[in-house]
Length: 330
Image (cartoon, rainbow, N blue to C red; front, side):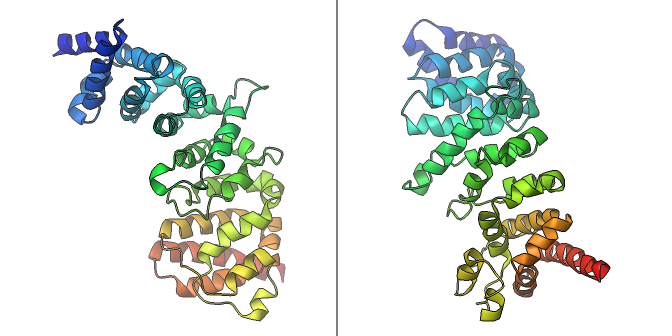
């Protein structure tokens, strides 16, 4: 079997396009099962370089090669090898040089896998290059936001940028770049959170950025008109709020809470929003900002409507923090 597989992998570099196509189609098929992934993973040093080259040099074969690499790169050790081969800049270069939406989607999925390891996140963020740092991610976020309008659910080419953003927000250097006001990346990402696409509407990226609240609170609050609706509306419950409550809120919150609205059914979104609010509220200035938009009242009403035990725990955690600090200040 080893000799047969080695022979197959050799055909990925054959001069004939037809031979390469047959080989990459077979390899793609093998990566679709554990039985195929195991032997291929064991020969990663032989398999990965020609597959990466096909993405760069063979437009007709780039899609099946990308599919094979997506499946292989779910293994962090293989992802590391691909990153060492320069697959992150290669994927981005090809992504913006062709017009095939299907290939674009596959390449973004590949980047989502590669950025799950720290070296992949660093490569995407261009940490080693002061002049270029953040350019790749800025470009991806721009495409992410542009592609959200006018595309059907089935055609959301850049939806997996949401996963890339989650991955880079797990590392300090990624959070720093996302929170730089001049780049505007956080604001752009927040504006995707009211999407109907389940990937786009998750709050994990913003929650992760809130871990920087102890030293980047002002940068977080610089987008307050987008931040508070993104975090408070999912946990505001289903009730129509009274005029008295609304009078103490900014327009972007008050308008939304003055009439009936669709509930946020996904408990993960509610939990992530509450975790982000908790991280902001650990800072005195964060608590003041939350009180200034009548946030505690929103949390009180939302808690009354909540029935998920884990989300209720998250409400109680921030509630006890706010109450204890009020008592401490009296």
